[in-house]
Image (cartoon, rainbow, N blue to C red; front, side):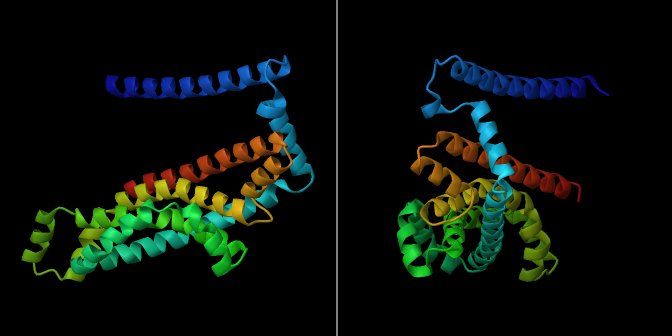
Length: 257
């Protein structure tokens, strides 16, 4: 192993150790301040109270039910966003005229606060799971389309010209050059979508839900149970990290091909 590789591995271990040390220090200080009455646990909760709340949710068979509801809605919204984004990006790439017509509308929709559409979704679709999933899609769809389309559009022209010199059809150029060239762009978009989609689902659950992590957080705030609110946030953080790690793993697997 070269000296450079050894230094690189040492640096990665040091970064990981520092990250863990900061997290452990933060949790320890938080718990000590709460234990000695230096902070009001009614307002700030504490790590031990959060753990007790999660254990209580598990013992009452509510923990995995709420996690599954949010996870199912997120995966469904995430998958639909990916499919719709790729299809629309392909259409825009194929039609430069349509892309120029749609572009200002995409920018306008992207700047629109999606939360404002919540009451409209409830009226149009109903106070149900469909409204929550639609909210998740609305949060992510515009950014996803713009990212993937720009990736398609920025494919090196010299490579396209080279394929045309070999009489490649537009279909072959797209399937064998443009799309494979932008696999990394699509994966990077997926990374962004995981966080945005989860945010959209939680926002949807705030508006209308009877289960899910967003419901736990909202219910906890309504009854002034900050332990439940913080437990919901903690579960949400863990869930988002796991989803992100899965996307990163898929990215690494794709890099081998």
